Image (cartoon, rainbow over all chains, first blue to last red):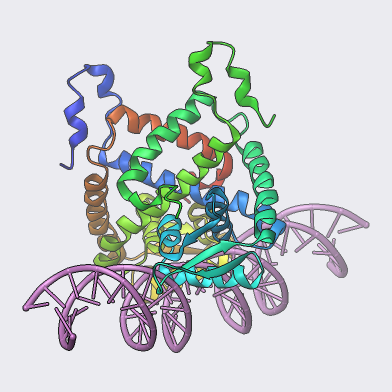
Length: 174
Length: 174
DNA sequence: ATAAAATAGTTGCGCGCGCAATATTTGTAA
DNA sequence: TTACAAATATTGCGCGCGCAACTATTTTAT
């Protein structure tokens, strides 16, 4: 279990032996993921924050809602998608509502529930922030990798993401 | 510049066209990195926290010091490596010092400076926590990818990390 | 039908961490 | 040498967020 890497050594010979992933390298891998995320956050937070006066985490909430056709999601779903706790999400929605980007709506079927819904202002701000965000990302990642490498990276990361974070999938509108 | 991906479409035909990385996919990529990091953090924080009563971020500090032969690093270097602000690091070292895992030492050359140094207790706790941590990682990542895929992932992430987080490199003992 | 359990969402509380300001020491220029 | 700028580390302050507790509603079991 702890050394499943060794199972793959013999099937293609010594060439693979050099590529063996030791336990130490696994720690390097997860450390690398943390460092990359941290570095990206530091580099990308500035523009979005200045653009609509909203933290990166709150911007992700708006992005999720923007991608949803109805522009609204249940609080619980939004919490699962963003990885925030219910309380954390509630506070974030508070702030976004206070800023006029979101409004809460009652759920017809379930009187306990509430939707977080983008206002018209929120939609507009999210769209312009998204454009800025794309530009930032392009500037940051330009020349770092080849397109097929980015594609490969998405595939590999998805495998880990699906393992550790199954609720993050997009979609499930309404 | 914002669409450097398109440069690679024509050189191998329509097969590559399917792999084209659009701007939207770049957003997916960085979102994936955040989600993966968040998911890993949620899955891995529990054991380490219970083991030595220390948060994941503080554990990273101890890991950095454990890998340093002298088991000590300047505060500024440690801040750069961990991505914490100077103040954040100072508080974290406070807490670790209070718990007996670290001690502060004056720097001989630079009377402004201070080392964060692992105590014997800190070394022992970091070592056993590291073993637990390795097991957690192995359990979590077992069967998710092939070894050469993990290797590839490390290579690709390193490219981004070096771009966004140049100070995170290990080493620079003393 | 009624009680018990599960679910949705919101607060009290505390903690971690970044920003700005401060004190101290080091480096640089006049 | 003296004055000024840069660097190192530490605090005051505020904010974001998770945990636990709570209310309100829905579902399930008896």
